[in-house]
Length: 158
Picture 1: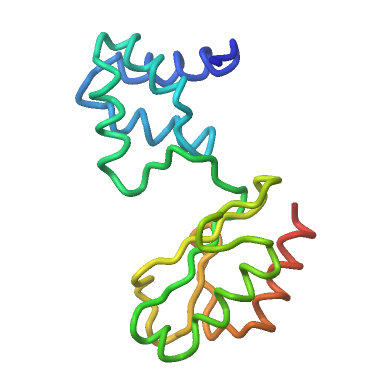
Picture 2: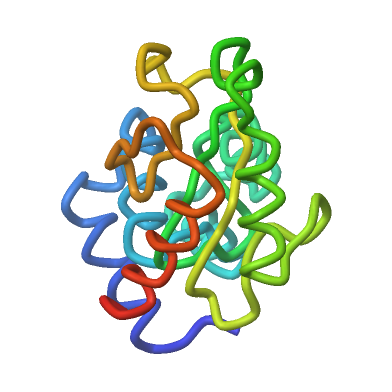
């Protein structure tokens, strides 16, 4: 259900770009920046406000990999499983993340919306393998033990 606050925030974003259809990707990025995902009711509202079909808006939101239709955590942890990281044991780090956060390959976000774990093909920091990022901050030469320490630090920050 679209709340008054959500409607007001989306209206501000739409007005900022003058409801210009050529700015739809930027608008969706800003909406996702506010909510950490694209709520279905927000997409429906954008479609109606811009006189576009909902299927067109959903098509854009699902075409681009950086958009998410599912809620994500405050801390988005990306673990690299590219060749260098895989060879240097990224899987035990992934397993540690899953165990510590009670997640698995089907469930990527904690119930409290504090953490999301995503596996990516490459983070571009092969010399620091194995690598993870937390909200785009790079942590290299990770081990299962350093991963637990990092999670504890993030929990304290929250």
